[in-house]
Image (cartoon, rainbow, N blue to C red; front, side, top):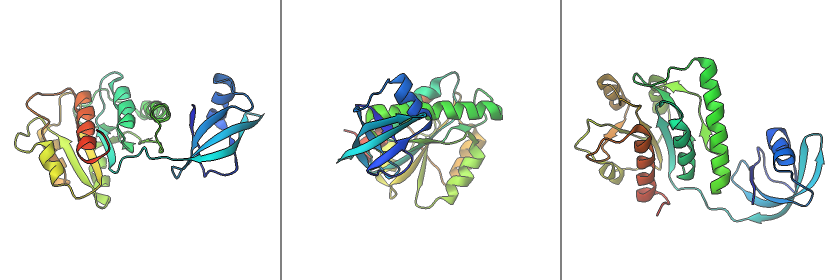
Length: 245
């Protein structure tokens, strides 16, 4: 059944407009009486029926509330550095499936490509669409938010302003502290997972991350590709502390 994220609160009737309405009417060729699952801004889920179409608007009627329990007890924000080509498309999609609540794309010294402001905005919009489609497909109760591309320095500054959170980062020069060990010491349910680009973090960057409260972890003896490391650390955290497995 189709799933739709509604930017408001569920009511007896709701009006869907914009791209979602256009998609329902023209791409999905929806008809009166068709039903779909709707998720609102509070994560409430309901079965709704299409009862009206007019001027690029679809009117829905609530049929019944539905139980929903698809969100992890861990609040995971994935912060991957920009990768070559379309590799980050896959990372965003799988982060949604694995239960992350946010993705914060970062620019670090070894990041490729270098994007101007227009291209950064275009990429963010593309990744948000990928995230939305993945959330619908896997039955999420919340939309994963893809933040605007920002610098590693700005990310560290903003992260320090948040309360009660932990920052872990994958680092190929770390040999003493395994991810499982760090997770055993965790006291917060809000966790930032920082993953470097191809080429990894520079020594000054790693030092800055640690000064900003980050804890380095190793994922094992083999050096993983950046996109593999992002999905591996997400999966391990969800298995150990979340709802995977």
